[in-house]
Image (cartoon, rainbow, N blue to C red; front, side, top):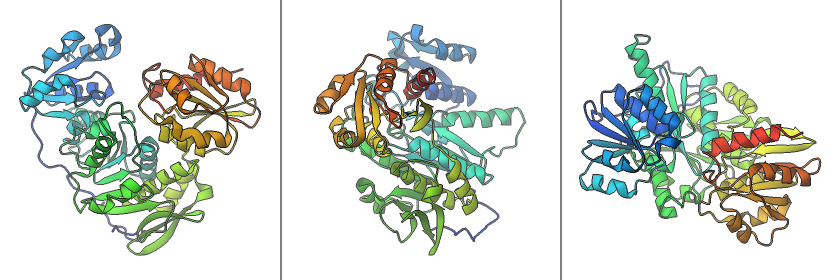
Amino acid sequence: MVATLEYAPTMSPFNQTINSECPNLHGKAVTVIGMGKSGLAAARLLKAIGAHVTVVDEQEEAVLHSPISTLTQESIPYVAGKSWKAALEQVDWIVLSPGVPVSHEALVPARQQHIPIIGELELACWFVDIPIISVTGTNGKSTTVRLIGELLQANGKKTFVGGNLGIPLSEAVLAHLSAKEEGRISSEWPYDYAVVEVSSFQLETIQRFHPRIAVILNVTPDHLDRHASFDEYQEAKWKMFTNQTAKDFAVVNMDDPLIAARADSLPSSVVTCSLCHSLTAGVWLEGTAVRARMDGVDYTVAERGHIALRGDHNLANVLAAAAVGLLCQCSLENIRQVLGSFYGAEHVLEFVRDHCDVKYYNDSKGTNVDATKKALASFDEPILLIIGGKDKGGDFAQLHDLIQRNVKAVIVIGEAAQRIMRSLNDVRPMIAVESLAEAIACAGQRANPGDVVLFSPACSSFDMFKNYDHRGKEFKRLVHELS
């Protein structure tokens, strides 16, 4: 399957150009839809390669001050508000931000005219001449991506870490092109690897995206307010493997039945991971040890007690990250050191503060029911759960048994509050409040020493906050202000 750790070639097995010839957009009229981070990064990249780019957004200028300021400084034309659809006429290409559905009615004429529609991830990958390691799944993506980045960097690999978790891949390409233009570097890339989190929204619009290592962690219902069905959501995830070949690697979680059922059909070399079963090849949990078998050689990667991340769901992320580390020939010593010191991504079961012997945890990135289930299962202490936000169509009743186990009270906020309360109507006490600040105060009043206040919303943030990052930072600010 892969070279063992005893094998130490002078060159990485991935040192090659991984993308086939891609379209030339120089001189082409390209409209970017969406003024978020990925839209702005795509626009700047398009300008850098000589495209005639316009950026549009259906929101009015009054609420787009920051992105419009950026576009103005970059001398990139834009259209905001009601007239944005006109900018889709007479274009050669459209680049779609992840927040805009591919089913948007404004895209129908473009499809009828066979105008190519891609996303920022697809655009950026055309210019990446280093191995891409991509991670998808309903939950755990950000933690796993950051952990892989730490593993590679600890082994002296220069690594870009980004994608859906915050820094668009286009930013890495822009930095490379800028350095080349200024003569600061040769034609070689300043990174050895690009590790990217990829979402179902980004994968909907890929064509040539080709990860050398593709990791799928889990697939559970999510984003059903955007995808027409769970089947459609799943198929978007599986597109990540479309362009892989037998020379590439797929790291898969065999404890997820939906993944296990499709693992044999993948075009790449499959590396399996499991918390529940010993494997003929791959990475698994055996008793208290993380074990691996590669090329018929067995070894212990790390002891569970020496792994800093909390919870079985995070241990599954550790197995996947360790598999990637071994594929990239990271040393066991460095893998163990990183696993013992890595406490996770921001907003993912993030310990915030111990106040009056009550521990506060920020799980703002828990934007679906499955994430909140995993967060609840990570604690044996009594919990005050803060939940709610913008409804994404999840089944909140699935939380019932875990709440009954050790949750002292459920404090509900946001647009989804009434549906959550109906779904969990026999859970007591359940308190609806108007704001996150009120929820924290309510939890604090009911908490006793030794309790945990867990903010794991099981909903998106867009009813009250800009995004989950804004929501999580606000939670942390409010907790730090407790006195």
